Length: 199
Ligand SMILES: C[S@@+](CC[C@H](N)C(=O)[O-])C[C@H]1O[C@@H](n2cnc3c(N)ncnc32)[C@H](O)[C@@H]1O
Image (cartoon, rainbow, N blue to C red; front, top):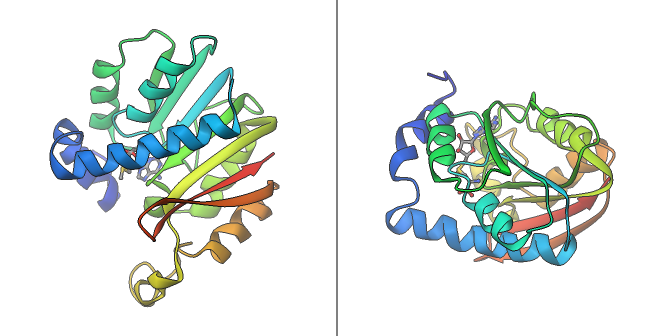
């Protein structure tokens, strides 16, 4: 069992993650992420999802991308990976336990790297973004979605004080990782936003 508190909590929720009100909220966010990703990268060959949970985003993308060859999902929670594998239903989908900070993925391989509502839980967000940049093919696109808002400043006074929960903080990490052409997109309500960037 992972020691990270957030990951352990997700591991315990994995079997019922797609059910109920929370499940519906995550699916609504994910559906918008899929739409944005396909608008930015209409025909990716290889797709990587970091903090993929039960694999919902990759299943949606696989259904719309018959020409793509690989959909790799990485998650730190082992039970999320088990649930994702059981739900996959497409041999191009693969799920591997691992962390954003040390991605079990090759260099310069993926045309599209996504991460949806996972970034805020990463222990070392700078390292995770550097890993996403490393895995991206030249010209490939990152679609990073999470809570980014100045409204979250009060939460940065406590346990989450080092988190990149504002656009400015996230942009610094993304730019430092060597990515460019940052664009922000409203995703869900006021706080959930996506940022796209190109390697
Ligand atoms: C809120 S869930 C989001 C899951 C999925 N992306 C979705 O949109 O439904 C956050 C996920 O991030 C994973 N996670 C947390 N920290 C991680 C890390 N450092 N590396 C990889 N995955 C991580 C958790 O295990 C969990 O499955």
